[in-house]
Amino acid sequence: MLRSVRHWVTARATEAALLAAPRLTVAAVDRIGALLGDCGRHLPLVGRQVADNMRALGVYTPDVQRAYFAQLGHHFAGALLALRAPVERRADDLARLAAERVELDASVYRLRTALTVGRGVILMGPHIANYLLNLARLSQELPLTVYLRYSRSARRRAAKERWYQASGVGWISEAADAGGPLGRLGLMAAALRSGRVLFITPDLPQSRDRGLPVRFFGREIYLPAGPALLALRSGAPLFLLFATADGQQQRLVAHGPYPEEAPDRGGRSAAVQRRLQWFASGLEQFLRSQTPLWYLWGDKRWTRLLRGDPQYMSPLPAMTE
Image 1 (cartoon, rainbow, N blue to C red):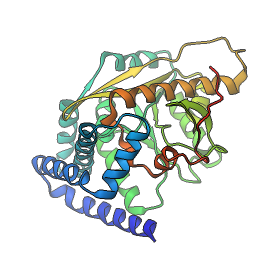
Image 2: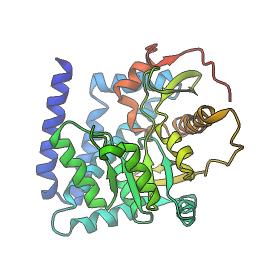
Image 3: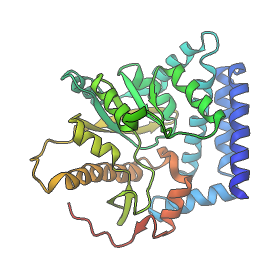
Image 4: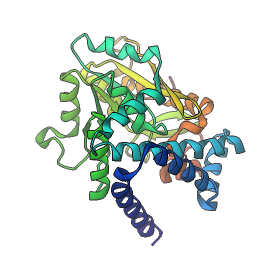
């Protein structure tokens, strides 16, 4: 019942955003985002869930929780800016605001250099708050394709399509028939062969029978192996993307590429695990230093994991480097 109510609310909110966004000014969007962020932290269930998840990893303070909801407000504002962009000349507003509010560290331009060798680049990163504006900014400098989870909701698919069309970012969907006989990995490999930067977010925990084990905050958790496996199979250089924040301004920072290594170090499975552990270790450092910027503090799967659900974690990691 609760899930049905949540889905209904999400669908109505998405429909309202699709209808209202084209009529809003930039100033109105910013005010709505600030209001939503301020209201969110006062919702008892949501506020407590976020605080409990932060406490589970030892990164909670009242100021950090407050800053997280402020970042959520910026995120919702960024979503509205993207939804209004296809109307008239408002895509110009989106491009201008992305350039003004998202700074690129010099390290990001290493991705452009990596593309010059005639193959694509795989960029792994977490769900960073305001990632829609971040991706719009990245696409101004790089030929960017994003891997998206497929949504069964037609409204949410329409919203996603409008977001990415407005920003110029290419996307690959997770529909069951995506890519025809080649499948989703085939579509991603084709994007790499065409010289694209393929952005993937592997920070959604998997059950232990579906994911690859990594060490994370003294736990063994399970993350999707796909991005690391694709990097190994394609030979595309592998980078990580994180961010720092200063109020509404964000600065994107790239790490990598993952260093070349001897091909016989434990075989392919071990090589995939090392690459995914590299991401997990980077994510841990990001959550310690930039706690408010992680969008998924209220995610239901992470909540189960951080409450000790044995399907998603083990308190006694048995991993070795």
